[in-house]
Image (cartoon, rainbow, N blue to C red; front, side):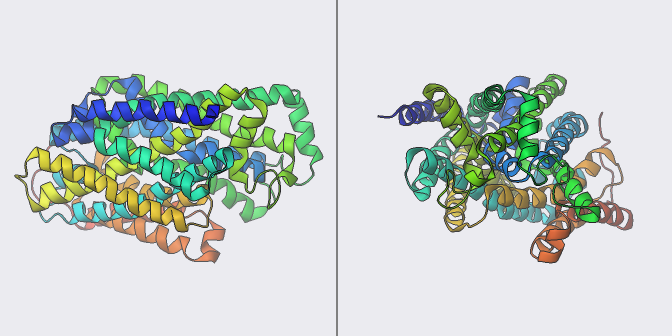
Amino acid sequence: MSPLVLGIVLYSVVIVGVGIVAARMNRTLDAYLLADRRLGPWVAAFSERASGESAWLLIGLPGLAFATGAGTVWVGVGCCSGIAFSWFAVARRLRIETERYGALTLADYFEARHGDAGHTVRITATAIILFFFTFYVAAQFLAAGKVLNFYLGISQLQGMAVGAVLVLFYTAAGGLLAVSWTDLVQGVIMLVTLAVLPVAVLVELGGPGVLQAKLAGLGGDYLHLAPGATGWAAASGVLGSLAIGLGYMGQPHLVLRFMAIRSPGDVRTGRLVAIGWALIAFFGAILIGLVGLAWFGPEAMGEGQIVADQEQLMPLMARTFMPEWLAVVMICGAIAAMMSTADSQLLTSASAISEDIYRKIIDRDAPQARLVALGRWATLGVGAVGFLLAWQADVFVYDMVLYAWAGLGAAFGPPLLLSLHWRRTSRAGVLAGLVTGTLAVVVWYNIPVLQGALYEMIPGYGLSLGATILFSLLRPDTGERQPMEG
């Protein structure tokens, strides 16, 4: 048995074991979906970061830096800014508000906060989550297939199946508690990979000066901050990269950690851990792409070359430069990145079905055992649809993630931010923001001339923000709402 296969087997045994242990602790839906709101700040922060930065961080972002050069730094700036803003502006207040309303999901919170007796907001939010998470989960399975295809020589479909089976088992069994503890381990592995690999290759290369000289010697625009563009094209490229950060506050699977952290006071520690993790991880991922470009050259990528596409760069570098045992750890890190996001998205999808639809609309008196079982079956169902979509996908992981990210960020971000901080936010405003953000992203993405002009997050987010404010003013909530707490 090869060291990589042995490493994957051992890693799989550990996370499956965690799922089995956690399954015994999930006697209620509250425990399954929110771990009874008792996650410590380190576990919550590592879980939020590992879930937020999926396989695109280890596979997609280094590949983008390899293909385009230094301009990718704007992605790191935008994402780190968005992470910090989300932890400062959303985390503590959302933790307070969701406990006060007894909310287990974002739809729960919106309904209770705005008195949505007709469940319109709940149903709309659930539909948006299930739609975009199907693409998001598919992207994670696709990434696992690429990594295992490159390293083990198995087909991409077989690699996808291995990743899907593992993540579906422990997520369906263990709920948020299993997801969070496995995310802690996965987050550590990801951070080690993104910190050690680029630095080791940079040293082997000869240092920053040599890196700059080699990139300059390749010709093209690899050292330009807006490669291959001038005027509006350059500005839109930079704005699009920065705008990725807008999506963090609108990702249901990330804000779930804010809701589950042990106390509002723990948010301060979690915030410092999460921001520190992000700074190391993002700029490490970008550096992997740049040192890989300097070492192998752009001609290494393509049909019949060293790598078939840019998103196989990280596995290639780990295998080339690291001792075999450490390369195994890093490849497990790439698989961990897939799992740590897919598990959270699957769990959030399960909560949308079991809590937001079944318990709150169909059967309010359903026994806890039935709700937990329904959550598990929902996890498996969404995972199966995501797997089928990944099987048919012909796009990069990076592109698929950006689409789902924009949809969720534009739909949920403005309504959530305003609902937490602006007293006049109304049910009509939240509903308008959800629908407008979703439609804007879907339409923009599917019109090539618009997609090429500007990342769909920007118009989607702006229109959602405007719609939330406008409809909140035009159609305010009736009746007394409880005052928001600080």
